[in-house]
Length: 190
Image 1 (tube, helix red, strand yellow):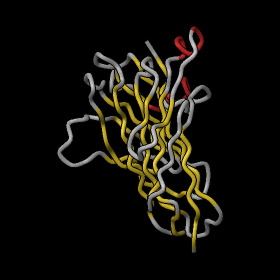
Image 2 (tube, helix red, strand yellow):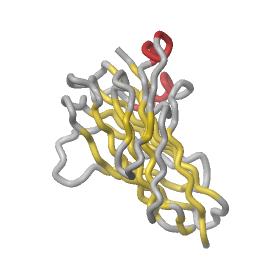
Image 3 (tube, one colour):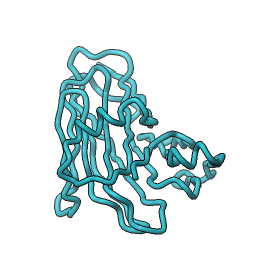
């Protein structure tokens, strides 16, 4: 079964030095057959999501970035199911103002991810998440020295039934138009 994740049904922005987005994605079949409900809790680190959402994406990002520097995003994927998920396809992209994009997993992790590293996007295939499990990793982007205005980052993906050796670019071609992106926005300073 292939199910999109990251379709924003609830967003929660935190009033901290770094922002955070919390989004949940309902499976395409559940979204068409039943209405999904979500609500953001009043506490800064909690969000309630629809029971049918397979994976929740949380993104922490800076409100301001400097041109010519590397900006880091903390990304966490959380399994909302009562069983293990299939493999997870994750896409991170920056449409402009970036010269290099990478995804890094913490040292000592056992994720065994398969990621691409490109100029404006990074695509990964991760093993399934066990019940109640989560993955935490870093997405990093080199901001162009001539960048001005805003830096927009997009985070999304799908739960897929394929091998972790599958080329993430093929999955992006398959899902790219249907992914519900979680969007971050930072101001670029010089």
